[in-house]
Image (cartoon, rainbow over all chains, first blue to last red; front, side):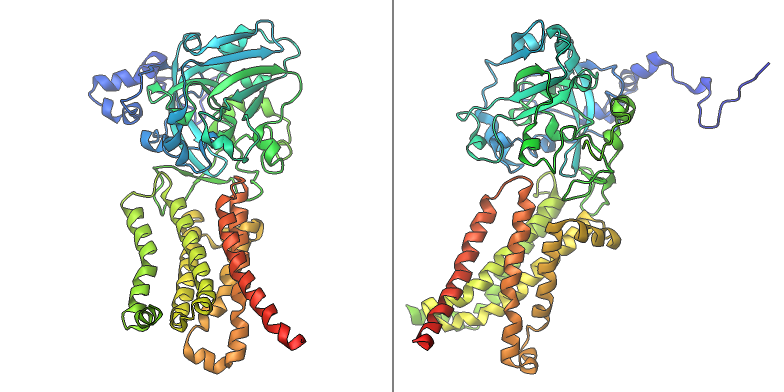
Length: 319
Length: 208
């Protein structure tokens, strides 16, 4: 008879926390009066926006244990060029964005195209809370508790055809609401895209809220995508159109600077941006002024969830 | 009016006052960094703030001579050196902040970064070119070198300005955000253009 001895790094079965206890560990902590110590309690919203609660997501990789970034930092340090190129601009100027009424057109290579009213979209599937790392291509990072559901929920309902190889996302471009459109920094509207299998990953989040509230305008209200394994600019904000296409679309940044920003833009510490290294990052609000920057993780730490999609690809070529 | 200005510029308090004015941006940046006033990314704000004040200092230094000649206020010349030395100080702090806050003082990483990133190379070159100027910024150096050679050496400041501007433009290239570099560029074009124009004007009689 073969008796298997577990390797030293494997936990004994007696050490494994039962799944039900694990999934309820926050309420267990709350019961002990330790709720204040949980990361979610630290991540308070503004208290001014409408509440948007989400159930804790059970998707693999949906909850990182890193300390969430302070709400004030996550909502005052933003790249949203439709409101200006300075990172303080969106918080100061995005109040002109009107998020109601709002319609998202879903069309292209699919059997069931349609126009979704934002309120219908909100109820399309159960809202989940997910705590994702966010890594900006500029070398800084945050940890944000988002509220939304997997993009695949919407995609499935549209029934994409065999020709649908990519999904393209278009951000609102309205000069009367977005002062940044007057500058020629990018070709408006802002367009981003994913390969179909990327878009269908449970991790790809159609996002409506953060910190238990609806999205503030500067963070892409009323609906955006969040793709935690890619650099932040791939996560298009204030989306008005989702289109299924056969040919690989050119995203806005790819068009603007193809040698610097590729279609994939997966977080990758081993492939430098032409003008700076991507090996390390500064966690906003966490790493002190004189702290050494922390190492950036492959696929921003989501390799287990997304790595298989890129197996065999030359990531230096497809950056 | 001109005489009053000239008296003020020549007064004993003028230089200490300028000294304090030059220190003010640094004092504000240091205070803001510790008082949490620099936003979500204080390191970046500090590095950029020091860089921007280096540029402003250099532009101000280059303004002295045209301003002196245009206004006839010869007393302005007293302040050029202090502005120049402050420019070098801000640039040095800018370099130090980058090396410390951004690169963790890892010298090999910094060296690799300078070679790898053209805009860092530009910034470093501008700073390195300022070194000999700062090192010869006292009276004895002028005597030792001789006024002519000293002046020739200090013409390098024009190259420093152009390279520093390139550094700034290149830094902003990623965001295609050229509004501010354009303003700095336009002012520098005027400052250098005035000098070229003077030179050509001076040559004309010789040709005739």
